[in-house]
Image 1 (cartoon, rainbow over the protein chains, first blue to last red):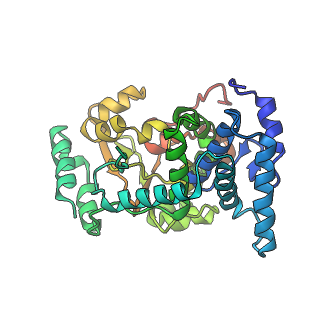
Image 2: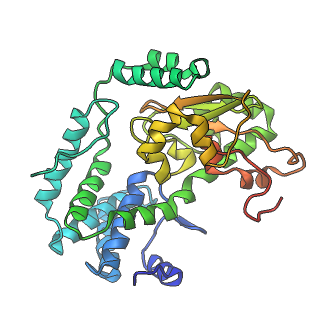
Image 3: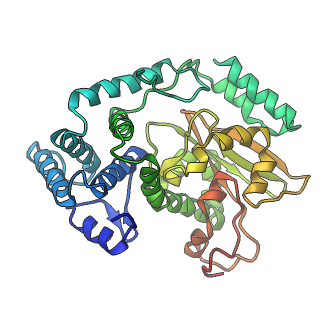
Length: 126
Length: 236
């Protein structure tokens, strides 16, 4: 499954309900959305979860959003995508929630303490 | 307020013998809001960064493979939006006037809204003026009109060399400019994003707005290339 198979790819994407897309494929409104998209695709390709599991996890989040009364116009689609991804990587034992929260704080901290003109880098835990 | 950075830019530009060609520097100083650290991105962005960095570190997913997926799609959203803006400006002089005077509003006219309120600035190329956009700090990029920044835009060599040796960088992109063409280098910030309005290619006088938009490339709107009639076997 290493070589990208356009047909397979398009079948997989078709399995995702309400994916924002146009004739050329998925569309993203912000960079983080494309990064979250790539993470799900690659983790699945690497066998950490099946695409079917992914589609189910995503569908659960979308359903939960709808039941909270959020507008079903696709504007929150990748919010749900990210939530589903965080949940699935925890379920699969790839990264737990505490580690993710801690890492997120570390990134925020890195931005706050990196002077203008320097690339933002995490201090590596030694 | 970061004298070091501005100093570096000024020194670099002077070294390149192009001090008079970077009107943005004085402007940038005026616009400097005294930030001494980087803006913290949105919660969503930080969560994705957390996921990505943890999973890459654990070897569960390969960063290059992730970049490849993003690259596949980076041309999907953006450049077409920017291309429509450019084509409209070419065929509609009134629109072009609005675009140069109030870019954010003129771009919004076509339905492309900005992100967190950053201001757009449109830079018009002319026979003797060529504009080049870079973000020396990170990868600030006008993504509502250009999509996601390409990998080279985010790379350290481009970010440093675009300022020090803009002509050399352009040459690597296959663009050789005459010696009397002024090169202006614009350094994006969290507050200001630049879009280059390339020159309309000669011979395109009878083309429709739609056909013109198909000619406009992402690279031409960053300023590393010109728009030409021959675009990979597209209609000419």
